[in-house]
Figure 1 (tube, rainbow, N blue to C red):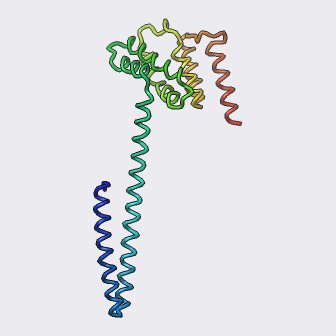
Figure 2 (cartoon, rainbow, N blue to C red):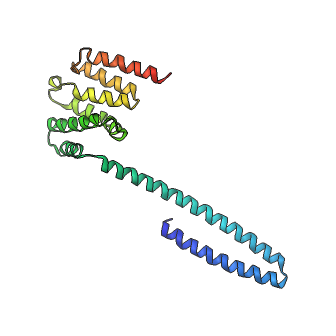
Figure 3 (tube, one colour):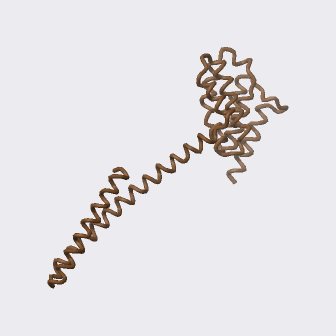
Length: 199
């Protein structure tokens, strides 16, 4: 039922209630309290049913409004750099160009990771990045910055197993994150963060 239909139904219920109240008053004047009581009970039941139906409808409408607000928030959140990077990624004709665009999008999310929306969105790009990286013709020559950024985003989202898996895949590709301890050291730090979160 739409909001408009519910409003029409509510108007109809109000009219029926008014008619019922008039009938009750007439029966009371005539001393016919039995019919007046029956009509009152009937009105009460109908009003209760309509109220419950309207409350359900309003609840659904509120849920839809909240979902719309979140979508609008996400749209507003995407800054120019992220929007541009995603546009390049989606419009690219080759995997190498797609990889550059997706790397830029992940990098922007990493940069803005203190904001939950960026952090979560960046982490959600993990499976797309892994699939794209695997499809690259010379992925062994690539740097591990994408894996480093994604492992951090996943870790910060509390997805520790996913962060470890990201580091392990980077190791399997023979990549480095540019630090002294490498992805191996990163895995140790993630495991420590996971253990701390369980205490």
